[in-house]
Length: 396
Image 1: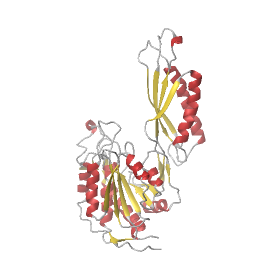
Image 2: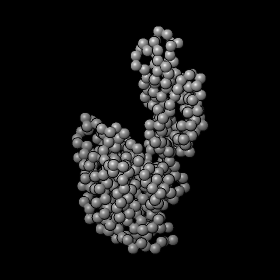
Image 3: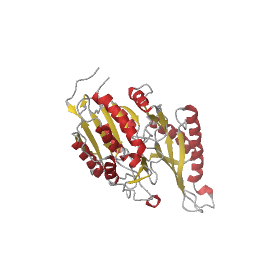
Image 4: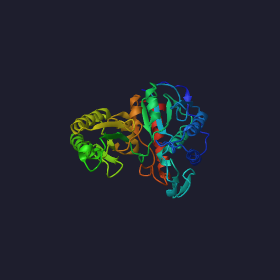
C-alpha cells in the first residue's frame, strides 16, 4: 500500500561528474588511526559532502563526535517520515606507505579503467555513487525520506557510529553500508576483540630461580590455556556460511623481560579474537578472565586482562529480511558472510534493517595503489536507485 507523498522531490543534480566529485574527496586527507602521528580530522571531508547534499535540498547536520570537534558525523536528510532508507559510509581512510604507491595517493588517477587513490574503494567512492543514483531520479516525489550518514573514525575506534547509536535518534527502516563487497550483499560478519594480557611476577638474579617468579615461564602456561580455550570455543561454535567457519583467536604480539641474567618480572601478550554472530564479547572476556585467573592464583602470579579497543560485536541480519531479499534480487547474488567488521552493529542497534554492500573489492582496501574499478560504478548506482525507489519513492 502506497503512503502519501511528503511533497518533496529529488531535484536536478547540478553537481560535477563522478570523476570530479571523487577527485575532490580523495584530495582531502582524512586518516584515522590510534597512533596520534597519523590521526587526522575528517571535518573537511564532511563539510565537502554537506555542500553537495545541501545543493540538492537535503537538510544537513554536522555533529561533533569528540570534544575538540575534530571528528564529526554528517546526517543529510531529504523528505520526511520514519520509514525511509539510510545510505551510510565512513569518511576516514587508513594510513598509507608512500614508498609503495606508484603515484600521489591524494591525487585521483585513471589507469586501465580504474580510479586510483587513497579511499577510492574504502570508501569515499560510495558518496559520488549515491549522486550517480540520484541523477536518474530527478523529479521523483518522495513518500519517505532518504538519509545519508557520513561517519568518523570507522578505521580506528568506530566512534562516529557509536555516537549515532547512542544519540537515541531514529533514521528509517532500512540501511545500506557501502563498504566494498563487489556489489554482493553481506548480511553477516564476525566481531573483533583486541585484548592485552599482562603478567606480573618477581624479579631476581638468574643464578637462583628461587629468588623470583618468572613471568615468561608463567606466560608459557597462560598461552597454553588460551590455546585450549580457542579449541573449546571452536568445538562449540561453528557457522558454515563463513569461509573460516569458526571463531578465531590469534596470538599477535608478545614482549617480556629486560636482560638474560634477570628473572623476568613482567610479560605482556596482545591477542585478537573474532567471534561469530550469536557470541558476546562480554561473555568471552569473562570466560577468559575466569580461566586465566584460576591459573594465575595457582602460579602465584598477578595478571591483568585489558581491552585494547572497544569490541565490535558480530553482526547478522536474518536471511528472510525484506532488505536481504530485495538486494539478492537486484544483484542476482546470495547474501554472504565476511570476516571483516563494519559499522553494521550500531546501525542495527538503531532499529535499522541493515546490509553491507558496495562497489569495489575488499581485496583492494587497505592496500597500496588502492583502486575502484570503473565497471563497478554504474551497476552499484543502479542498485541504489532501485532501493531508493522501493523505500522512498514508492512503498509496497
